[in-house]
Image (cartoon, rainbow, N blue to C red; front, top):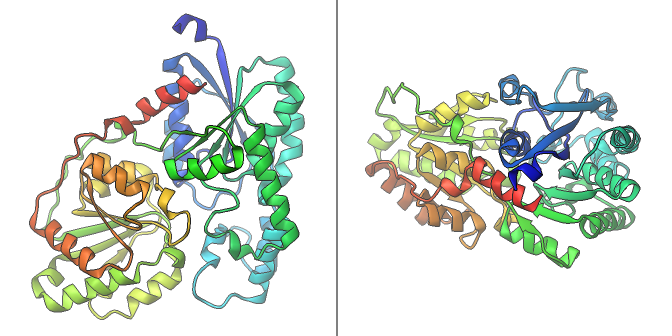
Length: 430
């Protein structure tokens, strides 16, 4: 079987690729790393000059030396967004930062409306036509067995759809996040016409693809309702090669809680902040030991809320974006790793990619979100922590107190979430 598969070539169309940082790049970077072990030769198609919200140069070292990468220029409208909103030419754009509690400027409101009503399905739509033209020429000269598109941005799926119709090559659509049900979709104020166009594009992609993959069982159920046939689940995971325990141990008796990633007002856990403030005021020893570390982009609305808390505000440290290898070291040196699910109708199926890396570090996880969620299922089966509803102060306080008094939890069933095992599952689908 291995011999038969040696020549199978997979074209992977993705927007996010090193030096892009953040969770979006990790999934296919790791699949690409392990696919050759299962008889598949990956070819990755990426934009030449993408404008990524965050960059992480350290991830360039994880790209396999012999990987075949092809690229084509992309035009993105972000320079217009910057001009309209008065931002600098070199400023990174993350529209998620506009969804906070502050009053948006008229220019920002206009920009979001344009994003939701004219840039359909997303601002990378201008890359679809030139990519189809470029890849059609490539496919005439180079044999490819399967095409894979991964979104968001969901414009990638439009490329795959058009290539399938032109070439007949099998096509797999990978949904890392939902499309029209994503929690921030309504923030773009889509008109009825725009909404109908988005929903029709989503339906077309889901029904035309030969296979559809997503990252959680709950989201697979949601997509099944549109596709009306099986949607496969391949979760995100952790790469065992990334997790070598650092020689440096904790150098203090601090109780360190770490949150990694992006946090905006849609996920601002006010009850947790109030709970920690209360615990600091009630227990002087806890207040002295507590240190809360933010590693990532934190919305001003979140910072503003914390700044008003007398005790907690002095315990918080903001380090900004940290490259992946350094972030893993932070996981090891933490007593509690915080996971926060969005307060939205899709929260049940939201499994942040960092959960699996949290698990691999061996540090206990405290998750905030629905107790009937897919995250709860994974945490329970692996024994890596606890989950509390967002506003259940009693549960949050109880688990924090237990974490302070207990040694770190050790998971015993996390191996099936290793990137190598997940790639084996992907190879079986291919």
